[in-house]
Image 1 (cartoon, rainbow, N blue to C red):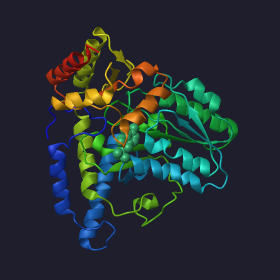
Image 2 (cartoon, rainbow, N blue to C red):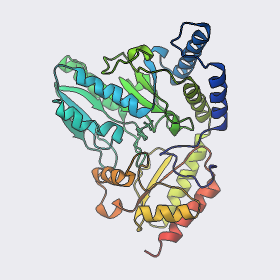
Image 3 (cartoon, rainbow, N blue to C red):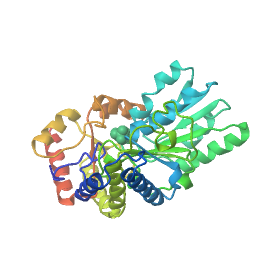
Image 4 (cartoon, rainbow, N blue to C red):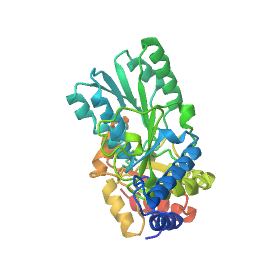
Length: 373
Ligand code: PLP
């Protein structure tokens, strides 16, 4: 499969050829278990730490704050499940528009005795004042993503963390601020140290890296629930996936070097086209340029199939999970969009390899297919 017609890059991306090549080489050259004490094991360990340092310096963080995992879902689980360890339960604030990897924890946390408060995100945007009002002396954890996967809205994380730090001083206790950064990595500029978050999750397959590999940033180590084999300094047990880590590191560099103006330009042209034709656009003007979400008069799964028949692949939901459409609709509902736009919402998402001419063809096709309804 090629990039041609592929506009579902927020669900997953197509691997860079150079990433695959890198993975092959690392698989062949470093086959041993990095925990083994023999020579090939030591070489694998050396390579692992070299990759960690390289990756960390790209994110401008210390290597010891970066842990490799099997994906963002696992990174998120490591952080959230660690709270199950705490003797004194308290409150947890979770935005209403988090990915399921975060929100699916709510029932478990409630069962464990935590009080969960959902933070509103009207039209996909969180108001910092709303967060400020919710933080009291019992809050232990706050989970707010940087970029939303359904409409691409970007949250003012820096301001929200700084409010949290003020509250910490006032109450004299630590509040862990976690940000899911999956849809932000390489797509919008941000610095983890400037944001001052305590933890953040990343995934390789959203930036043309391999599937099944992710990363976790932790400003300070945490007391995880499952210690397992003790790899990754006890934060994530299990034999390290060196080939995929090298693929992730390569993708990070290749994707970061891409021309973001190109995607900004394609997004603006499509937005202008859809606006001119009277479509309802859900993605705010300030959203990530990699996601453009709009509503049409046709049920989204019908249009998605029609477009697929013509060789264009978009999403009728945040299709990185089962029943993606239903889940995306819930998020869109939580954002307060009118019911009339909910079932017809489609997501077009770009990659650096998106072709402008093809994107405009897709926009025109959407118009042609939906104009008589
Ligand atoms: N968080 C967001 C915002 C996502 O878009 C995804 C995508 O599926 C995930 C988390 C889960 O990532 P992974 O597939 O690496 O577990």
